[in-house]
Image 1 (cartoon, rainbow, N blue to C red):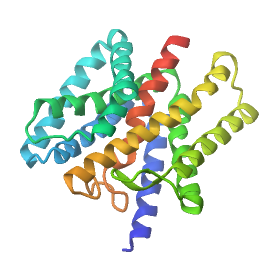
Image 2: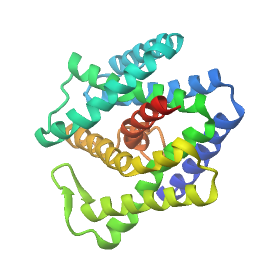
Image 3: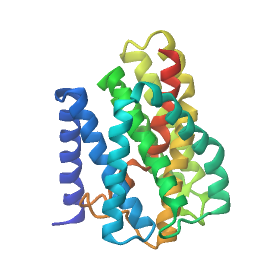
Length: 264
């Protein structure tokens, strides 16, 4: 089977499956599916730390245990975990990318960072879903719009490298395209959907969410380069791994959820 055919089939399965989860599953069932996604990402994170299979599985199971505990106490822990994540992405991550820190094998710090990346994303997904499945979908679409805009603009006009030592294919023109794509998405929301009240003002933070999505993308690119791998795994035929598909979501969803948490 050609790589393109694999990509198309996998994409169709993912879109269909995610749509079923969003609009046909109960809140508890959806949270469980989101937890499985997070566990797969944790298993891949262990690979970035060069851990053996047993350690990777154990790390994923420990993450699931934490998610279960958080689900029980979600009302109290949600804003705290989201705030910690936002501080990490906005204040620590730019410095991390500048210094190009690495993950070491069997290192508590590396496991902690994995939790800091994956766990708040799950919290954000559950919270946004609790507001509305459409809210979660609309927030994720910000990242997809940024990716599409960056891809086509970068290919057509890319000249100035964004971070050549981390991801040689990314350019500043691609970043501009991401901002343009998200801006067009925001305009469409204003024109075609009943975006009212505080959500209308919330569209003003779309450029910030786009910038944070770029940080998430660059961070995973850095870790894969340091680990000497192209994809985080082969779980998604034609698309690499789960982390390859959610890298920008790990940084964007917690910020969007935290902002929404304070304005609803």
